[in-house]
Image 1 (cartoon, rainbow, N blue to C red):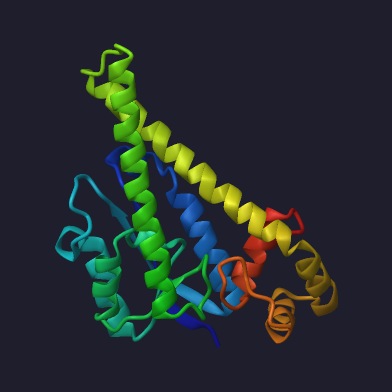
Image 2 (image 1 turned 30 degrees about the horizontal axis):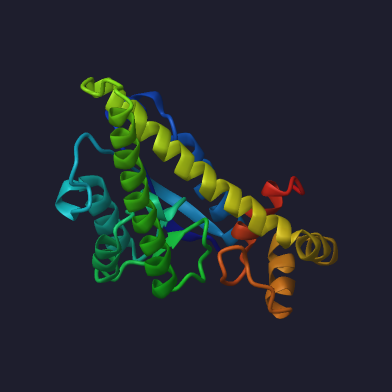
Length: 229
């Protein structure tokens, strides 16, 4: 029997919300996880932020709605990536006190609260580094005599820095998966199914790219990175 779950997806601008940019990919990741882990997404909640200050629950009404629905149904909330909840350690800590199970499909169901806090801390640090790089870039451009008064130019600089940071994260994930290629291929051949292959990797004490246990979901993600699925 499938277990019920609430699916939560989020984008940061009205433009993204209207275009669906990013939302479909999040839903697809959640659906894949749900199918692999025997969940049924009984309700989807979509959050489109239109302003700053999103690291406060009263400014995330749809997340609050997802929490209420999960409490009533006594089921978990599924999100594709941790940053769809927040990059703030304090905000993640606050969510843990709501006593609702949050499952980050990228990390797998076995991810403990400590793991979520750790990844939130890394994301928070990355955001700080992006901000520092952006400010340093603006100062350097100013020293070169480049005009920086236009708001559009500042937005372009921030976007460039954000893309660079995202590219680094993707490259690191690819490298971690590549280092495990042989183990993943062997487990998939021997296990036959994603669930059985994940169990084999766990039995052999092979850590997942995120440093935790393997699940069918994070194994599928790693296999796709290696073009094995």
